[in-house]
Amino acid sequence: MIDFKELAKKNHDYTVKMRRHFHKYPELSTQEVNTSKTICEELEKMGVEYKAYPDYTVIATIDSGKPGKTVLIRGDIDALPVQEETGAEYASVVPGVMHACGHDCHAAMLLGIAKSLSEVKDQLKGKVLLGFQVAEENLKGSRPMVQYVKDMGGADHSIALHVNASDPTGTITIVDGPFASGVITYKITVTGQGGHGSTPHRAKDPIKPACDLLLRLSALPSNAIDAQDPIVFSSCAINSGTAPNIIPNTAEIMGTVRYFNKELTQPIFNYLENISSLVCQSYGVESKVDYIFDPMIPVVNDKEVCAVGKKIAADMGMNIVAEGKGMGSDDMALLLDAFPGFYANIGCVNEAKGIGHVANHNCKFDIDEDALALGNEFLMKTAFELL
Image 1 (tube, rainbow, N blue to C red):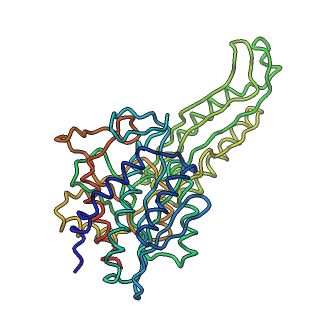
Image 2: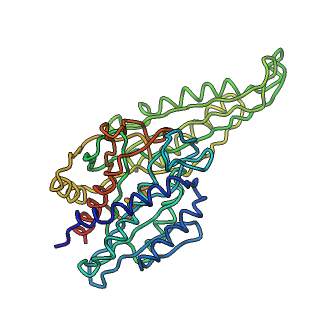
Image 3: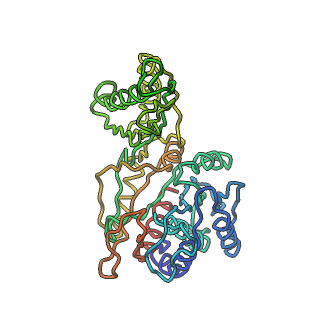
């Protein structure tokens, strides 16, 4: 039997070293040039087979050479436009860019797993794919990765962890079914005809229909969607005009819709476009709906694969949180939709070390690096069981 705990412990210093390297040299979504290059260099040193793609995605393969399933372990690798204020010796040296969400940890963990599994691959069955995914923060990276994995023959399951600054090290959150919301990010442009504030009858004011539309949009949950399907409609910006006596040509509304039922995706699109058109027609103006980011379906975990993960976490003595959905979104959703599995959060807070509850995306975000060894052990054991 493979001692995954010992393997994770053996390669922990390496994982920490790589995490600090990635943290020091962060790169934004779709710009992960050097991060991808470093990953490839490290895999080459290990003798691990990999494929690098033009968009900087890297997929490594641990092939046992024996019949079995294929399990994808995914880790995102992009950073955020945040100025770091941790004061850590490995703090970002790139102005205005920081691994404030923990993707440096995810990339390093995958390298640690690659190093560990390459040492015992003759004791495995099937294949483990390690997907170093770009551009999670703008929800663009998993779409091509799904296709890359399908081109490689597909995967039976996909699993991933996200470091979580809400919980202490030793806690893992694995939730059956919906875990993170889908999101549709919209911009509605209302176009009228500008004019003088003293003669509104000679203009087509876009502000009034925009305000009316904003209020009608918020009625979506109760008027068009089953109340048992949670949905949050947030119009967070309305912009128009430049002076108190000038009727502008246009007004813009921007916001998000977050939801947990994938089947609502197309109805939400239809509602946004239909209500925008109808309201604006009633005022004699025009509307146009654009989607600022690629829409993302909800993250939905597979119950059976979650059961495997929960048993392993329990055997490891971890504190398991099995309930709770988050309104944040993640493009792991598309990988889980294609290759059933789970996305889980692993705690990384350690007050005794001075690493407190600082939210992900905060300029002072940091982790207890002991969480990396726990995460690697958990992911390797889960993949092994699924194989």
